[in-house]
Amino acid sequence: MRSIDPRHTWSAGFARTIAEELRHGVATGAVTWSEADELLNRLRTVIDQALDVHPQPL
Image (cartoon, rainbow, N blue to C red; front, top):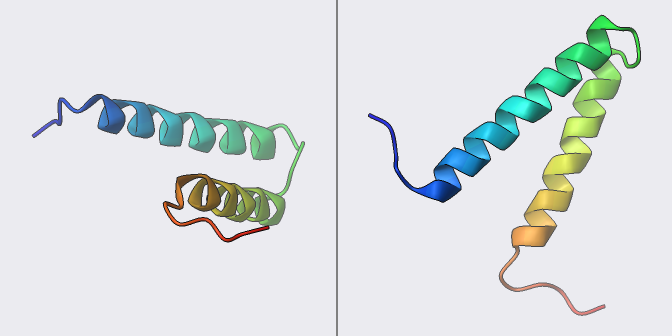
């Protein structure tokens, strides 16, 4: 069953794009799988911080 929620559509497309770009980077030798994993982990941190509803004071 597919969701009609536009947020689901956007997030699924975003995840697909990130996965394709990382695979392409590894396939072309631009990054290793280890580097791709590190980039993905850093991206998760940035997204988590962006979505935090109770950000920490600076």
